[in-house]
Length: 180
Image 1: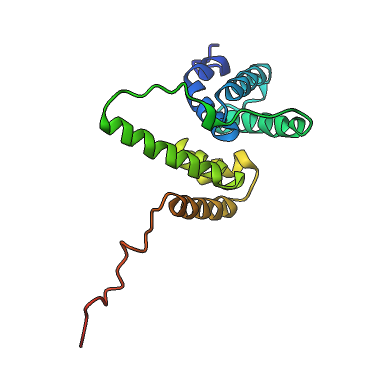
Image 2 (image 1 turned 180 degrees about the vertical axis):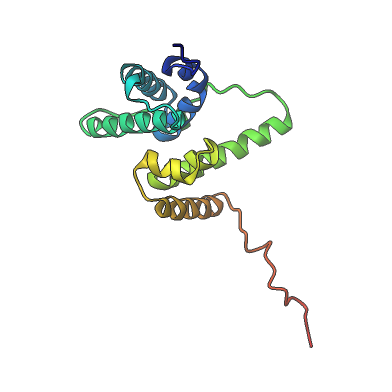
């Protein structure tokens, strides 16, 4: 009897960009992110029998990667300095005014994202970038769905404030200029 479902290693190949993006959002270093992704892939392949078919592969992999990141943070307390993403200058940008403006906006959002507390940044990236459901995000982070929702709301509000986006200017009470 053959099973047509892709194996864990086959799924990993297609999922690598998502895993790397989440790793970069956690550690702010492309080199460290690559190491985390490699370790997560190795761990997933070794534990392939523990993956339950019919469940979310992406949530399973994000949890493995996040657990590796937490382990790294615990070990890092005795390690030396880490590279900051702001020092990464190897990002190529096509010439042109639009590209320059887009790059500046991206840098502004990236800087604002890094100022968010880790708990808010993790939820924001998993829900808004990786498009996980609230339930799957709650599972990856081992927190209740209500906590996911409140952290996401605070993350969005804080990110808007940090980037100078104010929803207050666009809102109207409906009373402007109304005189009876």
